[in-house]
Each structure stands twice: as structure tokens, then as C-alpha cells.
Length: 149
Image 1 (spheres, helix red, strand yellow):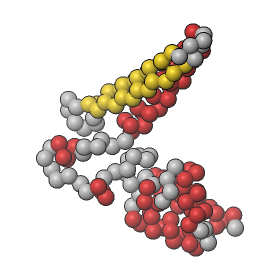
Image 2: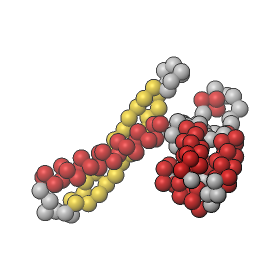
Image 3: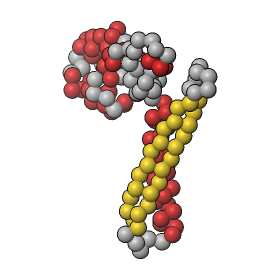
């Protein structure tokens, strides 16, 4: 067996904070057949780096685990008000969550069907896990179902 190891790091500036940056990295090690050709090994490494790039880019789009307000000595927001990491970083509002539930109820869309819709589109099982933008998209999709019934 041949061990292939790949790692990727990226560093980006923190918008609005002078002389600050945020870095994320990911790494992976896999085994390859010892009889693999150099071309096969190269192709496997290309795929690994493509996966690592996606993973690192996703992490860079997520809000920092430590909010700037905490660094500056301001009160740290509660976990409930901390942005999510799905989409644009801002969580769905309570009004959006209630709207999703109400529209689904009005359209006689069951909990299971609603969960499948959200899981299929955004990989989440409840409205409270959606981002602001994703919640708007679910609301539109539910409203459009009325037109089709």
C-alpha cells in the first residue's frame, strides 16, 4: 500500500477589521494500491485536493467561532443568537419559521414532507436550522405549491 497525504490551507482578511485574517485548513490521508500507476496516483490526489478545497471554502464562509465582539471585550452573544453556518450566515427569523409552519399547515403538508423538502434542498431537518435566505426559498416553494394544487 501507498499512503497519499494531502492538505490545503487558505487565509483571508477579516472584513472590517484592520490587520486581521482568518485561516482554515483541512487534511486527509488515504491508502492507494501499491500497483497504481503514477497517473492513477495523480488522479487520486487531484480528487483529494478538490474535496479539501470545497471543505476549506465552506469553513471560510461560516462565521468565526469567536465573534469579533468577544475579541473586543464586548458581551458575547448567546448561542441562540449566533449565526448559523448554512448559506449567508444569518439564521432564519422566528417570523420566517412560523410562516413556514403556517403555510405548510394551510397547504396540508405534513411534518415528514416538510422535513424532506428542507433536507433535500438544504440538508437540514427543521426550519430553525435554515439560513435567512434558505427560509425565504422554502416559503416561496411552499407558496408555489398552492398554485399547483
